[in-house]
Length: 374
Image 1: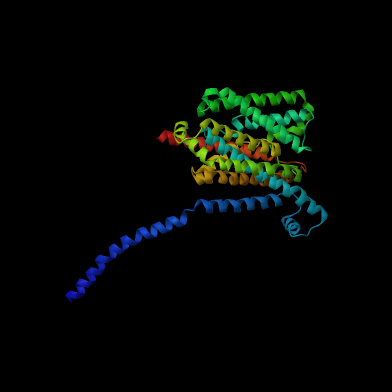
Image 2: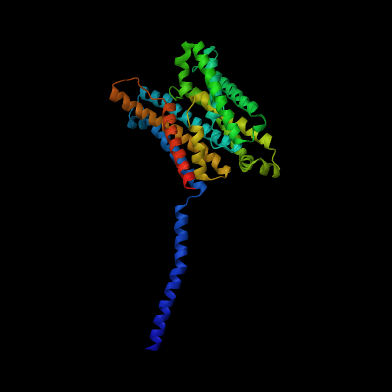
């Protein structure tokens, strides 16, 4: 009897120990299952890219989703094949590439300047590219029917805007706040020059409004053929700058102590960001808030390791722009049906600007609330 009591007591004494030993193991296993690694997150983003690409293909008014599938599998009539293969498919591809360029450009700028507000829209890059495209169109040197000339004009304007910011910043190039202030001023001046060009050549307003607002309407294979090699080269260049950009995010003193030539590294980063932005603007115009907000999403999802964050920003930008394009097409169909207007279309740039402004206000309020509690 005593032996049985002793054995039962021993079992009861061991059970809490086993429970304490097992609990952490189970908790660790569950934590690992819930937390995805960078590779898995990139894989999920690739799936999202495919999803929004398919959504952009079926978002138009005609043919129906079943008709689109029939065309993709080799069937369909001539009209459906033309709409899907010659209009919707290049439009979706251009939206994906432009979004990747803007997302990466914003991440490069915010890392090189150490400023969370250093998007292409407020550093003179996007306004300069728009000014170049508008000026070339007003002079009759470029147009939507000549994408190559638009790319050249937008690149020249983008580099001019960035160069003007670089000159105004002067010795304050390493000061994020001063660079941001100078960027806002440069962007305002370039926007004013664009308005002056439109006043001089008002007849070109209809052809350049797409650059001012941002649109993927009417993109064909010629636009894609010009955009993808440019985007591929500069996206690879941006990923190659992941190491120097990571050091620049730590500060100029720390980067210099690590042996980095900060001036050259920042200059190379800015050239890369300008080239990516100019390529996107020349294809789809000025899409508001994409280059500003996508980097914040990328850093939130992937962290500070730019070797993973830069590809992640490219994928997030592609998802955002192509998803916004699909949403704009669905919204255009709804408004056309509700208002009985066949030709009513919602530009994708208007959608990204409205949604981006709302998100920026939400983020600003949350950060203000956190700062107030602190």
